[in-house]
Image (cartoon, rainbow, N blue to C red):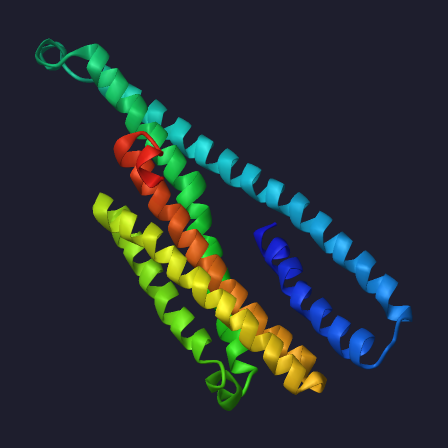
Amino acid sequence: CMILSVSLDMLTPRITGSFIDDVIVKGNMKLFNKLIIITLCIGLGRCIFQYVKEYTFDRISSKISLNIRRDLFQYLQGLSINFFDKNNTGELMARVKDDVDRIWDGLGFVGMLIIEVIIHTSIVLFCMFNISKNDIDKFEHISKMANETMIMLNHSIEAYVEGDLNKAKEVIEHDDIVDQLFMKVKSDVIQFILDQPSEGEQAADLLMIAKYFERIGDHATNIAEWVIFSLSDSLEEVD
């Protein structure tokens, strides 16, 4: 479902390119209604697959956490009486529950985001290989956006692994830089279309690359927000 959702997402720039090349430039208005219907179907399909994807990850993580909780209880039941004399049983049970719940959240949320980042990064690399280096060099903001996104991704994973609250906050603050660069890339692409109307499909590919960089940055931000939530049990510090 994740691959299907991303695949549908990839069609959007192609539809945009067809709007520019065939409808606006060539004046083929017969194609306009078809493209509108296709766009609506893509949006509906993305919503459906997005829901199924999140439901599937939640089911898998819940089964894993259930097995972990069962194994832990079986292990605790096999411990000696002396162990329970030295440790508070209620506190021990609460600790087991809280830790397993965090594992559940981590698998269901962070795991899904990391897989999506891998898929999006692969798509970006594929698109960049299909575009000549000279055309990419014309859009300096895409290169800057790629660098800033990779910084966010690395820091978010480090914050998750190390449990670093400050680094997680830095990732969230860094998201504004990526968003600003994305707006600049959109302006560059619009100017590129005005200067070269026949290159609408290529412009759509460049916009798709920028959009996926922005999405990777959003995933990094989500991971950082989860780190803050897991460390503070509150999202207040995110704001």
